[in-house]
Image (cartoon, rainbow, N blue to C red; front, side, top):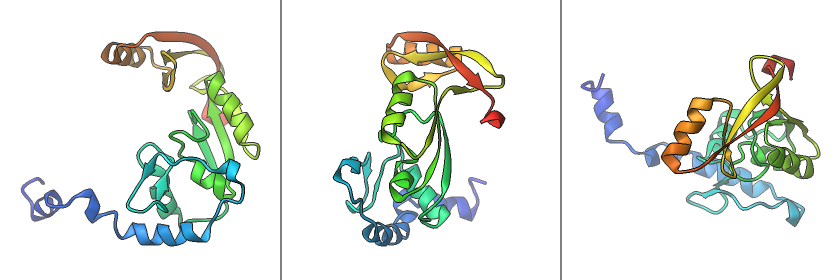
Length: 178
């Protein structure tokens, strides 16, 4: 495949070759929408070519979802391991637009933030696992974005980043029971 004409064309392309056609459409959509309450404004994580085109997600996933879903004004989301209602949030853009959903967060800190900032949503303090019951949550230092249910992954990340692992029990449930 790497020797094919298609692969040579792709090798010459950059991310900018894919994103620009998206930007005008998203910009038009964002200009039409405004947040009425200044308290609801959040600083976007990533600003793209225009300040009107910004993402609350870690890597712009919310922009791609918006494009794929057709910039719908109403909808429903399920965010497993939601972490934070604003920081690295894949659902903040949609919540501000009027969507609602279910946020599942196994850290007490994250769960309480969702209770405060997402009153329209259903917020669950739990981990998603194969069985109902209790499971061990591994968190690295005070960074809840690095929480996992996998012991090996937690300790490998801790060694790599020079952090300590905190272990704690959390309620768990299968996704089919949400």
